[in-house]
Structures are given as structure tokens and as C-alpha cells.
Length: 337
Image (cartoon, rainbow, N blue to C red; front, side, top):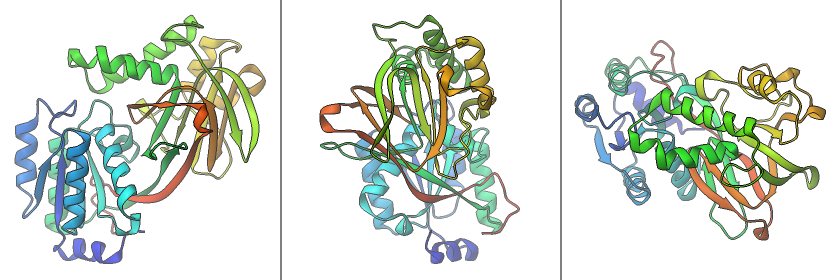
């Protein structure tokens, strides 16, 4: 839980506000001037530009040292992930600033899941009005994924993917971003990429499926060749999709699809359209909610669009739910804290 004194300062209009601004985020590059004007309109707010990992970490440290009450992350999923990752390494969530997100990235799954959408400058204008009028938005809670493996630093984020999902994202980072494609068009290209890969079903090369074992509570439940696996604490993903159907009351949503499966095109469309509950495990489709998941894997994976490498010689890759943490949602200005 956020410490009450930060909420009290927001209510009183005395809160300190900091902007961590990534001017290189996908949707921000062409809107920098308009965004900077809106940030400058918030009285006494401090803005720090940060475009790289070291700069983001240094900015977060500075805001924490200044005892900032509200930290506004203006950027995409990668920027939000870098902020969360560093905050978790330096202090417990109760000590954090209150967080809010202004979506300005190539993809903005975290912000969209929270209900924050639209142009960055419009969202900043709404936030400014809320702060000025002390008509404060609600706090929404989300758990955060903690991904860890022996010998490597913990990684925190909201979405984990392997297999064709990771391969499509990694491919797009080198090719599609160079063309300046962002937003839903970029997301659609990624989706079409891993759909095409799933249907082609290559067994070798850069679009090959992934070999892994799935472990829960020290029991190996699944082993084999998988088209993809993803895990998230977000309720909805790209385009509002909810491609999981587990019934367990746990924060971590997990879905995976085997390479050998029945009716691949029809079933994938069912999964992506939110009708996955009709899919059967015996046909190659599985979804559940859990608190901890372990994978034995030697392959690339992505967390909020950032790529990493897992090696089974370090033991299982462990994914668990950390938090929950609170986000202030400036799109809803008629609720009380």
C-alpha cells in the first residue's frame, strides 16, 4: 500500500510531482513540443529526460531522493518496465512515489489495461486539471511479474512471452521500428508475424517453436515443443484481448499452445478473440492462473518488449507475482482517493 501521507498531500494540493520523460518513445518523437508544454503547465513539477537504462535509473534515484509524491512516467511499456525494475531493487513499494503512466510508446499495454488511452498531451491535460482542482482520480492495483534465475538479476514487468511472441517482438525491433511504425499498426504487425509463424510451423531457424518444461510447485506438469507461452498480470493485452481462461483466484495469468495441435487457425482466432475457454488441453491449448510458474528453457524471452536470455544451466526460470502496486488513473476524474 502507498503511504497515506502521499495521498493526503495530493488531496491538499501540496504534493511534489516528477515527470520521467522518454522523448524517444515511439509516439512521443513527433509530439515532443506539445507534451513539454503540458508538463510545464503543472506548477513546480520537475521533469527529467531519460532515454536509456542508466538515465532512467538515475532519474528514479533522484525522484526517490527528493521524496517525490507523484511520479509520472511519460513513455511506453519499456520505459514503465525500466522504472518498475529499478524501484523494486531500491526499496519496498510502500515507500515508492504514487505512479501514473502517460502512454507514449510504440506499445502501451500497461497503460491501456489501466484504462489510460489517447494522445499523451491530452492525458497530461487531464492530469493537470485533476491536480489543480484536487478532484483526484482513483488508484488501481496491479501485481507485477518477477522473473528470476540463479546467477542473473531479477527482472520485473507486466508481460512475459517466449516462442513466437518473443521472436516477433525481437524481429520487429530491428526492422519495423526503423520505419517509424508505432501504435496499433506496430502491434498488428507483431501479431500477424507470430500468427504467420504459428501457421507455417517452422521447426528450425529464427521462427522455430520453443522447447521447454513447465513446473508448478516442484512438479513437472508439461514438457514438449510449444508455439508460444505468455504470462501476465494485466487483465487485457493488445487490442483489448483477454487470451486466457483460467478460473483460479491467482494473479498470474498463463497461456501456452503446443506446436502439435488441432485446428491451428480456428483455435488461435478463438484464443485471441477471448473465446479460449472452448479450447481443450488435449488439443494443445492450456490456460490457468497461478502465483508461481517455473520453466526449464534455453531460449530468448521478452518482458514488456525488452529481450532477455534464459539458460537451463542456471536452474529453472521462475516467474512469480510481486506487489500489488498502485497506479493513479488520470482518465477517471470523478472518483475519490
